[in-house]
Image (cartoon, rainbow, N blue to C red):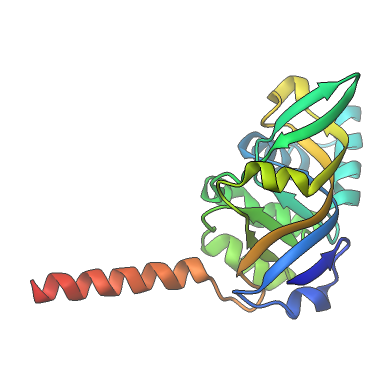
Length: 207
C-alpha cells in the first residue's frame, strides 16, 4: 500500500502506475454531479465578476484541491449536537462527470479523483497533461470507507444541493483505493473493456 499525503506532488503522481494500491490522507471533499456542474458552469466558465459567495467558494476549493483530491460520493451523514459525521460513503459512478472532470482537474490542480467505474478519454488525457490519477474506491464498503473519513470540517452548498450532493470538506486518514487510471496514459478500464470486446468478437466468430 502506497501512502499518499495531501498535498500530493507531481513526482509522487508520476511514481504511481495503474494497479497500485494507495491509502490517501489529508483534507479533501466529496463532489457529485451537482458539484461538478456548478464548478464548471459558475466557478470556471461562469460570468465575471463572481458573486461574493462564489468568490469565497472558489478560493476555498483552490486551497483544498491544489495537490488534493475529490471523492465522487454522496455520503450518509449524521448531525449530533451540531457536529457532522460520516456514517457511510460508498463511491458513486464516475462516468457521469466525464464532461466536467478534465476542466476541474485543469482549473484547480487536482491530483486525485476517487470514484467507481472509471472515466473516459477526456479525463485520462487530463490526468496525463496535468499529472493526476483516478483511484477506484471500494464499492459496497460505505461503512468501511467512512471509518477513513475521520472528521467533517465544513460543508458547502448544503441548502442549495441537499446533503448527498453538497461539497463535504473532510479529513481523510488512510482512505484505501486502487489506481486504475494513471498519469502515463494507462487506463485499466479501457484495457479491460478492449479485452472483453475482443473475447466477445472471438466468441461470435466461433459460433
